[in-house]
Structures are given as structure tokens and as C-alpha cells.
Image (cartoon, one colour):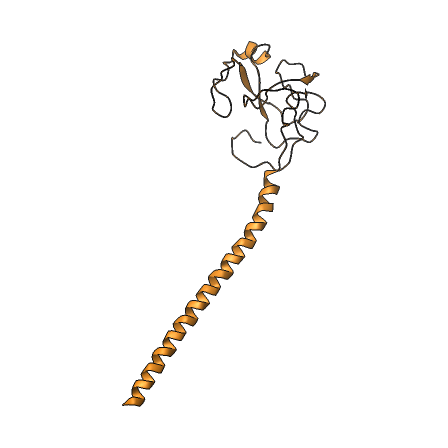
Amino acid sequence: MNGVPHIDYSNVALRSLNEDNLSESPSGLGVAALAYLPRWYAPLNGSFLDKTLNTSPATKHCDGTYITDGAQVVRVDATSLSASPIDWDADSDTSEAGLIQDINFDGAPINAGSPVLQGYNDWANRLARRGSNEGRRRRLSRDRQRRAWNRQRWSGDCQRRARDRQRRAWTRT
């Protein structure tokens, strides 16, 4: 937000994106302002970025696998927190619709019926999972208390037995 890179979970689920039918405007990534600058991959050829900055293409897919199909893409960093319009193909024209593009550059083929990139609210889902861990933690705590109580009871039984043995030994003499 302030230009300083940091790692965080998302706190809002952005709208779903279909890589075989991207729309730059008016929807882009939704209508609300974004908390962080978005990044995506765009084709190197035809990109005004390449013409302006003389960029070099990515050497690997985003998952670290090597590029075997000759794809030449550059990573695009947005300059605005506005969710719309998004210039997916980085050609400085934000009025296009029906674009087919591997915006996350995972190397998976894009065709009709490709999986849709789903928005996800990390914080909300992390807190939901945390609730189930709380119950587990309480159960573990309760089990620990029972074990401690059983140890005390067992040690109490041992002490009682030792006292009884002593009393029996005294009564024999």
C-alpha cells in the first residue's frame, strides 16, 4: 500500500477470472479499490511495456517449471489500486473483452472449459479453520488435565498403599 513490499493474506475474495474470456473494462478485478497492487503476466510481443522499457521475457513459469512451448511473457505490475480497468495484455488499450491469456503463467493450456481462477479470502478462511483448532486445543488441554489428575490420584494411591504397609508393619511388631 505504501510502496514497501510485504507479505500478507488477502482479506477479500476478488471476482473469479476465466483465462479464456478476460475482460479489461469495466469489470477488471471488480469494482472496489484493491489493498495491494495487482501483478499478472502479459505477452511480450505487442506489449507497450516491451517497446517502452525493452523488457526481457520470463525464463520459467510461475511454478518454477521451464518454458517448453516458446511462450514469451513479461510480468506486469499495476501502477494503481483501482480494480478496473485492468490492461491484461499490456497494449495500452483497456476496452478489450474476450481475451485469451495465461495471466498467472502456470503453463497450463487454455481452452474452452479451462478452470476458472477463483477469488479467495485467506483471512476469513484462516479464522474459520482456527475455530476448529480451538476445539482441538481445548480437548487436548482437557486430556492433559485428566492425565495430570490421574497421575496425582495414582501417586496418592501409591502413598496410601505405602502408609497402609507401614501401619501393618507397625501393628505386627
